[in-house]
Amino acid sequence: MSVRILARNLLPKEAAELLGPVFLAEAVTEAKFARQVLLDPNYRTEGSIVALDSGGEPVGFCLAIARQVALENAPSDADRGYITLFAVRPSNRQQGTGSKLLEGAEDYLRGSGRTISMISPYAPGYFFPGVDVSQHAVGLDFLLRRGYEVTVRPLSMQTSLWALRVPEWVIEREKEHASAGIRYETFSPEITLPLLRFAQTEFSGDWVRVVRETGTRILHGDRADRLIAAVEGGGSETRVIGFSHWEGERFGPIGVAEGQRGKGIGQVLMYRTLRAQHSAGLRAAWFLWTDDRTAERIYNEAGFREIRRFAILRKKLS
Ligand SMILES: CC(C)(COP(=O)(O)OP(=O)(O)OC[C@H]1O[C@@H](n2cnc3c(N)ncnc32)[C@H](O)[C@@H]1OP(=O)(O)O)[C@@H](O)C(=O)NCCC(=O)NCCS
Image 1 (cartoon, helix red, strand yellow):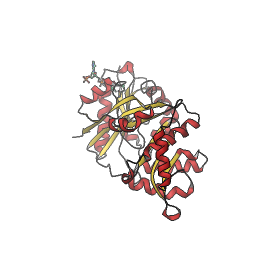
Image 2: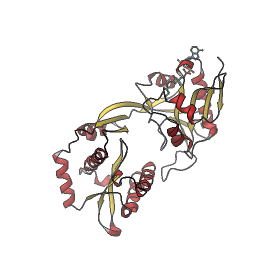
Image 3: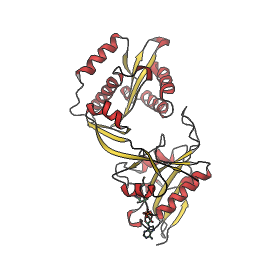
Image 4: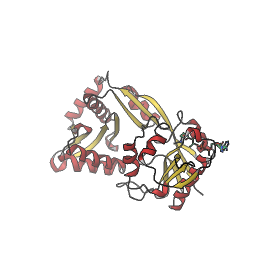
């Protein structure tokens, strides 16, 4: 069957039909596709490469993103582009369609002046950090054979909230923090600027966006404990030294100022966040991206277990 490859918008309905069954864990619905792809200021039709069968129906899709709009104060990534979605309908595989889609996506990135193609750590619109090594082992081999190399292998973890128990030592640490003048606060108008300043200086980029967007949502009526901050000082001297965030069952990001690490602030923030999720009626908490060292140091004790493993890929575009 002849397949045509062209740059064309994929309709949300087409996206859900084509991508939903391939990326089951991501649950690509029409709304999610519109929110994460079509509303992204970096989305361009030219990077949306579609394979159409002879009846005009989409049977494959590859989405390439070359950032046009800076992400807050993140370092420039003008040298690279990202492939964030890539799939061919199972019945149409092994006919050269995937290869042509990938070429089309890489051509778009080259034409946008990018010299590196990454799969798929694009903030803020990534569906997965990289290729899921067990669910998409065939796709991973396909990409490795086409010049992609694995850079890192982050893992996704999940914990049940049913039996959440805060360890004694974490409770003790929190008391010690209180005597040392460190308190824990849910988001309020007063900590808006200290929190933004913290995110900008300590983490930058996507974390600043998280603070801005979640702060706005909280001020529109979301639960204030969706952002929890570790705070020192008061009035105009208020300083945020750590924060954590959740949205539905998704936990994180969570981070402590570099100079304040090793005191248990991260653990207190983590348990406070898990408790907030639990009290919102959630049964589980998960996140998409950490490394093995952090998993061992922090997450294992809270009952988090590996549920997925990803390969982040990189290719130099010649
Ligand atoms: C990865 C994926 C997009 C590849 O799509 P595809 O259409 O099967 O790709 P192609 O047909 O171009 O290539 C697949 C293999 O079939 C071979 N092939 C191509 N035309 C062929 C033909 N006419 N007859 C037999 N084999 C053929 C290719 O040589 C290739 O083998 P190779 O990798 O050893 O070179 C597809 O497997 C997929 O959708 N997987 C699930 C999602 C996924 O993993 N996405 C990537 C990570 S996000």
